[in-house]
Length: 379
Ligand SMILES: *Cc1c(COP(=O)(O)O)cnc(C)c1O
Image (cartoon, rainbow, N blue to C red; front, side, top):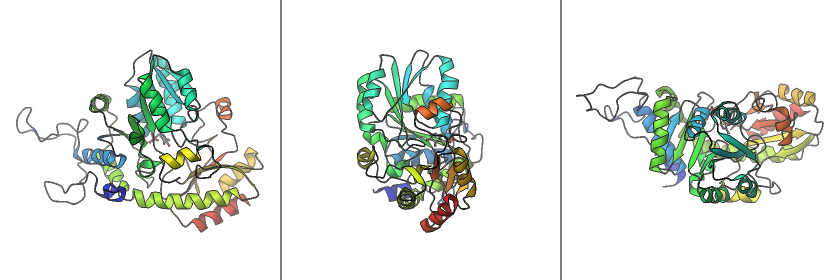
């Protein structure tokens, strides 16, 4: 089956009790058992819930994987992956990734004796350079947030395999419609379902997808034991969001293309970061491993003062000034003070994230209206 059909039908069976075509919101904490140990596959809603189960089936199907697990947030999903590790284990991760992932790694897991190497993962040789017998996990984000750097998933998967480390890819920015890391050799795919999967900025949730049954058992054990599970209402919202993923992503790509090209020719705009430009350093790899370039981009103004950036950020009317991304409505963000404030300034600057960088999550509105809004704000 083709992606559009999988996206609509994945995980959704008519409700066995009533025939309801949409998965009901099973708002219950427990399930009555016929006799001790005899039940319908559901015992207690931290361990299993039918709405969550439908969503987990859908997550696996749309990523082209075997197993899906849903978590109460994207960082809860990251936290679950980290709990596969033990003190002394080493992790190689991208130097410019989502600030919350960096915070979780350095502020929480370093304390527990996990060692992190942050490298430029767009250069696979950098990963090889810091590999050691203790490397247990390689963490990729591609495209990265907010500089839209592209890492070669297949090349990094080959290195991880040789090292005997797991490869986890944060696929939030691309969504399963544009990129499927498991097919390129990754072991685990992570999503902040809060973003494109939910798609309507009305839920916080995370997801993991994997093929290996042992890995699924370990991660399910962590999900159940640590308890960061999403509620059934939120699972319903993500299931509902997924049904239009392909339609939304196509429009995000179309609008992203128009806005990136418009920004690039604007006399007051400096560098534009969007992986669909042919002269973007990751263009060849992105064209190979992605089906489209999406609606995420960042740009700098030629006048690179923070004040000018702040003026633009406060003057848009359609683009709402807010953290997050991937919803139907367009958002504008200042990484240095918002999404990436948890990364120390020296680290940020070293990784090319300037104080004046502006990030856009281009929504699915009319592209001409979005351009007019930015045009008025930039002046
Ligand atoms: C938002 C985000 C996360 C964290 O997800 P939450 O749902 O906010 O916990 C992780 N990775 C990326 C790339 C994100 O954009």
